[in-house]
Amino acid sequence: MEKMWAPWRIGYILSDKKENGCVFCNAYEASDDKQYLVLLRSKYSFLIMNKYPYNAGHIMIVPNRHINSPLLLNKEEQLDMFDMVNKSIDALKKALHPDGFNLGMNLGRVAGAGIDDHIHIHVVPRWNGDTNFMSTISDTKVISESINNTYEKIKNFLGR
Image 1 (tube, rainbow, N blue to C red):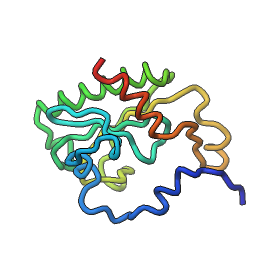
Image 2: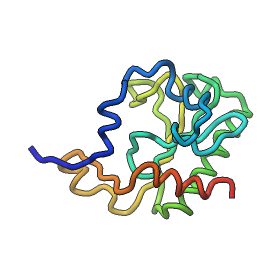
Image 3: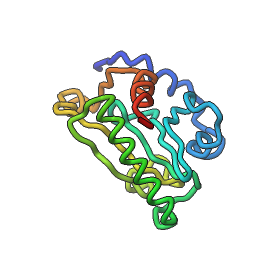
Image 4: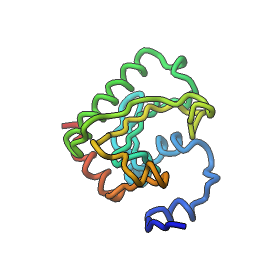
């Protein structure tokens, strides 16, 4: 068996997986944005780092209301969330200089939603060569910077 040293994963391994309530609602209601990795708040939505990212800088846009379908968003929420998508892309470009982005939603557990009762939009920065032998052969993703360092870099470019 091949081993990869990933000391940051111990936080997840030892964490209580049975968080009370919705992880997004808990982040929305919290006063410590840094603890919950909340980058920016607006009237109808907020930006939050994905605690278990596909790539460094993986951000999610989450409506403040706890809803499970984009069909339930009103026009103001729709516009606000897409404005937050644009702010995410702009900040990620300035902070991390990616070559491209994946943008999307997973609606329902069968579609890959890990949290299917509170919709969210993923913004995942991509770089040429970020899929390499590690992800292809061993189904392992290497993220070379701590999420807290990445959080600070991105936060510095939001609202500018």
